[in-house]
Length: 451
Image (tube, rainbow, N blue to C red):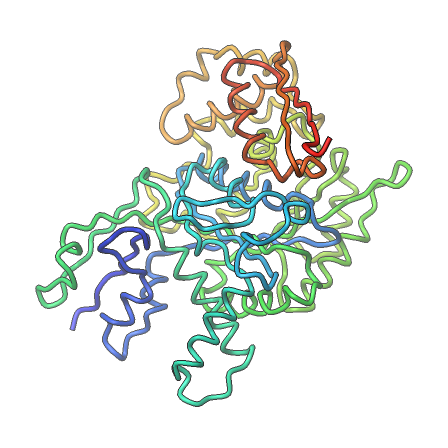
């Protein structure tokens, strides 16, 4: 019989089910559900980190997603947290910052808040994978006898569960905008449910996956092994690994050894990065890029990107775009060959890419005064842009305009966890957005509630 297409509706929709569950129950025994999912051409970009934690993997992956949206692509995000907790609801804010609550009530890591704010998407609790969730699910299957008496092991049972979870949640639509639609086909003239007949499904083109912690941690090893297997499961044209590292400055020299050691640890588990993001106080020198590229097995200095300190976080997507990250990813993932993206994928961002050469972001923390003024005041040639790339023009204008605010507003926050400001990250971001709307710098004053 004719095989059904993939059905990928969000769990919270009353008449919906997840794609893998749907295919398992509606696909002929000889068919491969995973292969049916891959027919959607889902691409996966994984972000790992090394040396130290807290380098900004969440901001990096969010900025990458925002840049890809500017190219006309639809994105979704998954956060992997290797801790044994089932979720972040019972964790101290002093250790991990705020617990971010999703629309479905899921209590998750604060990075999912970054994803939602940057990408304008609405995630579910399943988009946050923890060791506790995975083991609980596998043990539940074992208790039900799903493994038919087999010895349950980390490999293959835990690693397979992780891969299936990623593949399943990647196909859950996360917003109501975009151009990618799929209408389910009838099998022998029949639909599984009445809702299937009229379903209009939007699935992301790219799934961004952040692996929490650092490479080499004992608790994250099972996830890295699962990703090593996953790259072969989906194929090299559908999988891209990136690595965020620290480049410290000792005296006046940018040191590359921490990055070399981090990539060596990553390659020792069978994963090799395509792109290396280097966090540094200053712009990465060409000699430093060449050295890292030579010792870390990447395709030239162009794949070593400088993610240096900038005046505000909204400059990061522009910084990545100026260093041609979108073209590196497009080549690696063969985006130009996907039939469904023709007419929508625009790597030039309707001319914005060419204008980025004027910004000189790699030569300093902010653009030159002329471009700042042009973006802040709304130059006519910029207003002429349209389509998906128009959103990137608005983003650039917002980022540069923020640097020009002169007046400030003081807000006092009284709290119990003021020792770590990430404990109130959503509150801070809300105040930041409000101050931007009235064109004011935000000046926060913290007061410990115990005083």
